[in-house]
Length: 383
Image 1 (cartoon, rainbow, N blue to C red):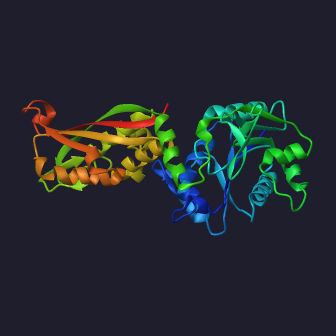
Image 2 (image 1 turned 135 degrees about the vertical axis):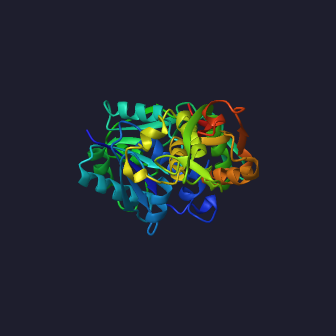
Image 3 (image 1 turned 45 degrees about the horizontal axis):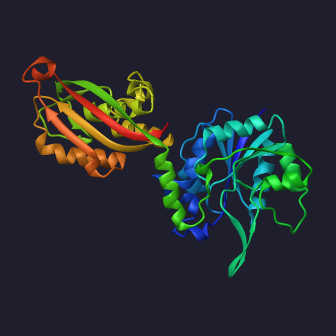
């Protein structure tokens, strides 16, 4: 079976305010749309992602999601949500997809356990939805409080909602003209099919109003755990080479030798960041044997590592770098190096520390044969 995720991101999001539609507004360091796109595409049970966007929003959407581990299609949505979903489903039918998860971009955080349970539920039903029981008191009201309503058996239905594609597409095609649907699961029920329910999640709360962004960011931050990892790198000092440290060109009579620009500082930080997410080391991502990296600026390596952290929902909290050398003196260049690293990682300069030490003339650094760097990165990332 082929399973796709369909994210509806074609709305204007006027109630959320802001200069751009809410699906492209920043949340926890990334566009809102990026969170659900990454979570769904990273699940091993999902093979493809279709984004339904508004007219003229393709470039915004592509920039928002970045690189994903599955193929991605863009489909232009319609006047109503139902029209947008229908357009996406028709596109998926032409791809031969058999199962689909339909999700609203306004619900950015999608727990993996919810995806697992939805896909498992499709073994026993044509559709499945996550839902949470209603906990608040319900009452009728018209200017003043009216009678309470029983809440037993009442649930709040969320997305993503999972379906066999042929069943939900038939429900959309057969839906009466002029009648609006509250969600896709109700359309499937109207077509006479059963919809299973699985345990929903508070992380799936919908963002509608401006204040919802702060609440969502708080939920996101509460779900993260702190991780720290170290990086260490050494490069040989040679005459005739340029000296780059932390992305800054340092005037000196000698420089560092290496396959790239040999920026020992950025290499150590790159390895530290990769370590926080268990993503190997710099050599795995940029092999020295690959000629395309000859002379490359090491800022590219660090940007790549930071992008991998962000793709996993991580937030870089602090970078601590120690340079180990006899010469040149690092003090005069310390502020420039801090500023450069902060700019590459898009961090406030206060969250980057740069220190320097010598080995008291001992060892290869003491003899001036090479330079070493040690870095520690602290991030918060999903457990």
